[in-house]
Image 1: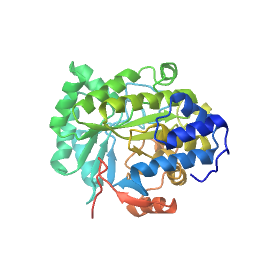
Image 2 (image 1 turned 180 degrees about the vertical axis):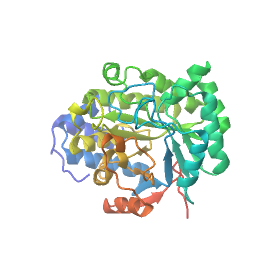
Image 3 (image 1 turned 90 degrees about the vertical axis):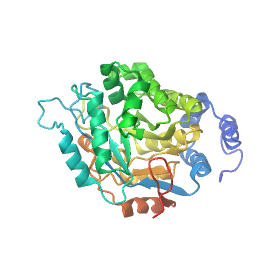
Length: 365
């Protein structure tokens, strides 16, 4: 740490000493850091923690996304991606179209396909399984990260299956891991205002718990910068930390910035860069059992992704290119990122770019 002693209040000094000695900080202490600690102190603490996990490395992978449909039974107020069946912007890809899309977007050396979309009213577990099997047939060695907890819950409950039974079925079809989407914010009051129709926070946590029980790894997310408070954010990551204590199944945490264009919460505007960096830093400091914090370029934008690396993030996702529309439909103008671009982001922030696979194994070329 570069700060001399007695620079901060006695309370903040105690929290710093506690964290640097490896003792877990409490939610109240995390809130105090967020509210009272200088921004650069948060960056120093977060970088100290990041280096314990990943030294000077920043990870990326070679991946692409498939979003089979943006037609969704849920009408979340923050969502710009969701469309009704009769919308001119709606799509619903057939199995053949999904296969053709995968063939078009897969490039040699890619290690992951990320499969997620709207919860289509006609979706079934058998259809999800058919998609996974078709992708496995044409890309036998790629890691298939398939569907959010919200998508899983819908088709499992529709089929009358437990979460364990449904996940086992999709695993047998060729699914390797699940995505972290749909967590939004766990605080029930805020959740009821922004996504009241969606599966509850407890169901989201139960689904991931079941996946981890089966050895299926997952990511975790949080949507921030809307109606939630700092306390709500800390409560959210505390629940993730608690589940990780039990299962150890989360590979990474991804704070997702709310983007306000073309949705019914546009009036809120968007969070400042300071809020973004504080959220990244506190996540890294507080989540002492989740190995990686992802700065997601389609959410943050390229420049702010670079800043996030200086505040504790150690992952910048991958070569998504223009295969995801979730943030572009919310008004984010994202440049297509090549592997060289990703390496430049890491090096410009002072780190070493390292290619990884879905499970953070280093890929040797």
